[in-house]
Length: 484
Ligand code: AMP
Ligand code: ZN
Image (cartoon, rainbow, N blue to C red):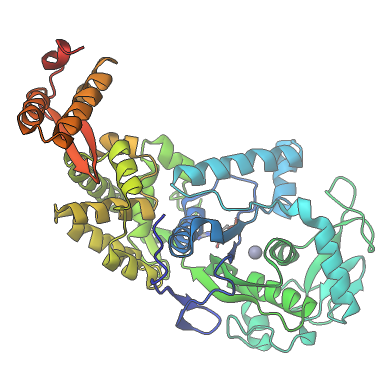
């Protein structure tokens, strides 16, 4: 991968309400935590938004700092009352539901072009770490036990509410806080609660019970990324109370640590201008779209066309436009000989460099609509450099993973792609002979071989001393038959 350390990344930090230059704590290990799904049902398309947004950031960080120098954690919440309710309703075990749903989630997110995060921790594998963090908070006077529960005392943390910029009184007024007789302050939140018969539970110093939601993320981030790390992300619906509570727990457990330095929040997704909901009948899952034949990359391109900080509207018009755009870009590249071979050759020769303007725009707080606008310009360029910029940009944004699929994206009829197995070695031999003739300065022979290839409709592109080929429009294997 090309080193592009000169690229300055700027990110909007919810904590400071400003767009700041990103300075990693350790450029050799840039660390990011993103709140993942609660696994009791198929991911709806809204759930795909944070997965895509933070995958774009993950890819950008990998490009700038090197793929080996970025750690991305996205958790799986596999203990939650919604999961218990779903299991009871379906008469199935909790483990079966969470296993199945986790599998669906990972497959659906991969189908949308998202890389697997470095770690995908399941909350239930970190119960010991949660218990020890809760014990630490009790010892430090930030938590108390009451009726088998352990609660975090928000009055013990002066900065509670700083992320969302609200006072505790505002929060009480604005939120649906669960009033319970055992709470000292109505804002105090549960870190541990008792589990009765038939509910998942673990032995703890406070009896058999299960963790609250917020402590999961604090404990997993601590274990996998350390007390202080670079970026924490999630949907803006999680800012309060979930993220405020994560901060309170982690900051109090580790006084003097920053927990996450940069907080990033994606805005919500709407469907045809309305909030997605089951009652409005506009509720659908990622799988529904994939099953209707909408390619994952088309869904992804729709998401990228809106900045993550703005509400995004999913519409069928946008879906169709995105499909058209991808087809056009793929066609331009295909017509210029792009495919797996060509990209491999470009990478090997060191010519696979991002377009500086594209990367600069993307690095400015993940301006994906701006980055896409730049790709539109590059697609009209037709110079080798513009085409490399377009191709690299598509890969950078996760819009193409497998260059062999370019033909399909371009909508090129598979008919001209199918040719007998003997064709490939023959063409490869002609190319090698042509190269040898050139090296020997035997121009007549080199031209003769080029004419044979032309007559067969083989489209040749020379990149960095390597020739790559694709069957061109008038591809005709009969011309090559005698050369077998
Ligand atoms: P949940 O499983 O509800 O905890 O949500 C998992 C992730 O999806 C969280 O980061 C949420 O913020 C995000 N999310 C849920 N609904 C939407 C939506 N309509 N638009 C964008 N993100 C959403
Ligand atoms: Zn979380």
